[in-house]
Image (tube, rainbow, N blue to C red; front, side, top):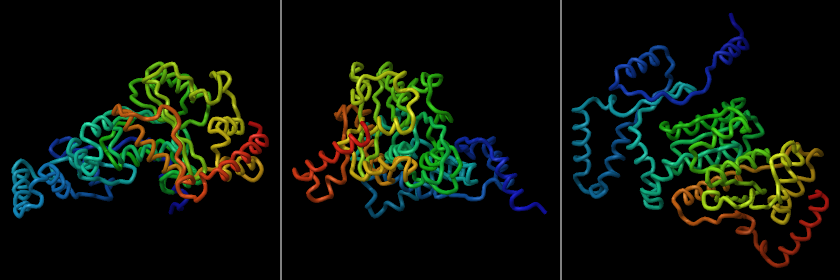
Length: 395
């Protein structure tokens, strides 16, 4: 009898490369045969079918004036009866098969699916705004904070088409700030986030680049983008990303954690191709100057970019412990989620031509929640400690 170790190894070695869900329609004979094959071979272990409930929601939002009328239920049943005259409900809509968890879900066709899924956004987001947000092509590079940003955007009904680039593997220490599960440990972060995106919207069209962004693939990556979400660690690649945005007139947005707080940097290369990279916050730089920076040097450059006066005191103290009692700079999950919500908002506003600061947006829970945080005395004290930190950290 094979041991548990042998069997685990066999399963691990036979796992296929990641791909999105299969979208199958029982009204199509080939799709019906494929679904039968999956069921008979026990590749489907879980079935979700609340299609009738989805139809009810669709009928409600397309007939809002009769939802509270006494004969609403009768009219809905008549609607179902007419659909069943065309074909059984099983043959309507789409069966989305998710191979990574061996499940299948019966869902509405894309237009109706999107209409129902975003119905509660109205009219906080208008239909025209929602369409623009959904049909814009997003680029995402970096999946630590970036993964949370993607989820916030997809939850809000954005990004039907996207390109995602990252070559990192999900590790246990990542799970303090990435919404995921232990079953994804050891997976590429691209696969981890792909599973989550498709679980929310199986109709999403994603181009995955399981690699770092670099000189050889950056031209293709930026082709066709409407907006860029940049969360890369390497500053020389950050620089190249900005040069691509400048060249193609693509707006770029970036989020940075700062203790419990965050900040959003907006660079509107779609409006002004003359703005300096990083809004000039790290001086005049080029690719060669930035290439080859080591981790500690990157940390110092990020701190300079954020500004010592903006770095929280606990973050400053932590940065001074790198290589002593800490392995890497700290990041918090609540800050990642705060940044993600703000980035989704900013992206939607930009894509819909609404005014957004073309610079830095500070998100400070400390300023909002801590008494006296913004007082003159406390502000001056932080300035003095920031000067001391700058000298000790040598920035």
